[in-house]
Image (cartoon, rainbow, N blue to C red):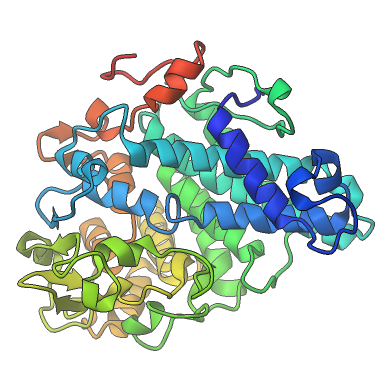
Length: 453
């Protein structure tokens, strides 16, 4: 594995590292802490881990950034971008440039999370309690897997279930940087290597994490993310079994109605893992871009509005999900992101029902439930009316109704090998470029096809 060369990530890392350290250290001031001191105790390592959560939950990553890119890159008229930022406008046009500031933030913050988790993993010997050490290791590997999974999904050509997947992925870094002298120049690992790395981290996390861990990652969170990874690969048996394990044994339950899954200040019964937003900490960019100003968004219209073509997915015009919208200024907005201080669901139980239904259908199995029964559970919750029989198309449409505007669309298009207007699922225009600043800094970092160095 290779070390990371990005200077900006180094400084982001250490700003979070020092801010995470124990305020009660009666030694030199925080601004002059050495890495050795900052990483010197189990309490400090735990705080560094909390800092990694904070980085991952930044609005540049899982609190809105990655979701925005997925929805706009896959948009074919179901949404409109009405905002003033150039970066999302490039996503919507499928004309992303190497200087796109949103793309640079995805890359930099993802590798900052990787770096911070690497430092945690390198200092597990600071823990005397074996259970605490295992939990911390599992949480760090869960977070690291999460960022690498989206790095490879956005910055590389899609995974091909029948191929060798030797296409360029992203650099894998497993050594934590403590000082600038450690910075070197990595090349890109293959897509197959990145997926293998992500699966290894999540498999370890499942073994290490406890059943319950407050709002931090627990065993079910690692299982749910692994189910998502397996589905993206086309490993339907693995996806089915992981999703079934979460549904049957995690203790999570669907909220009583569809609205109950969103705009919550604390985790709902359905949240397997959610990014925590409070009035004191965190920015909910799902709200920033997807809500009107009356509900905390940037503009009266909302920056991302829902357009008429989207509603063709509904087979019941009176169901709850069809009505889960509100008016902006002559626009229509999803009600999913109406509270600027609400948590952002990342892994929720409804997705596991959809994964289990699709995988069971493709495999002609009924592990845990039949596909029809799983789909009707979600339809009943949404007052959509039951189906008498189910097809693969029914399951995929149910997925579009249930998971709309949560960041799934681009990745579903790629794994299902669909198109975005006249762009094939594996078009270079649906892959993000490596930021130009990274190419300039690292002569070993090859740019994606279709973008000039």
